[in-house]
Length: 237
Image (cartoon, rainbow, N blue to C red; front, top):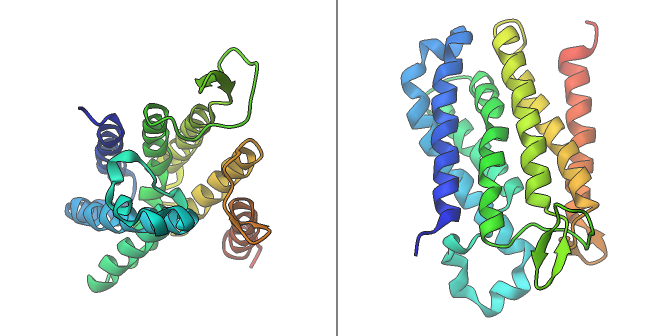
């Protein structure tokens, strides 16, 4: 049986890498180290997958405690985007530190393409019948067990495409005139807003005790990233 989830994830990663190679011409720092793109991508992808799976398993720990073998069943889905972002970022930073290269210009260019990869990858959730919201009578609702639900994968996919087009256009204009790290911050801020919107429609929230971690993460990131952007990019020196 063809695993469409895995195919879409792989396709999204390849498309992102080729777009990064295209965008490298707009940044003098990246263009000089263009030969590193594949190596950095490998480190980012591997560490991102590990982080994505670990956080997903932690989110559904009671289930995996009784089904530990299913931790290895990546083809059935179950990847946390927050875990992927954390793991991928740490992997890229570690690799670049080993090479004695400052990481933020590289994090910027990878961040520009990430929303497109996410937009494509989200359709894997459709084939796995994942990422849907509460009941709806809207014509684009998807049928789950005989009732129509909000297609959250579709909402996030569309919003990620908008985010990608915005970052892509801005990067081509300002890649050499903004401080390193600007696009990395901007991506995280935009995506946190997207996820905050999505969490109000989701039904499978991650709770620790009475704390809704799924909601707390984007709210904290919005506050932290906005503060960091103000201090580092917007405040008059």
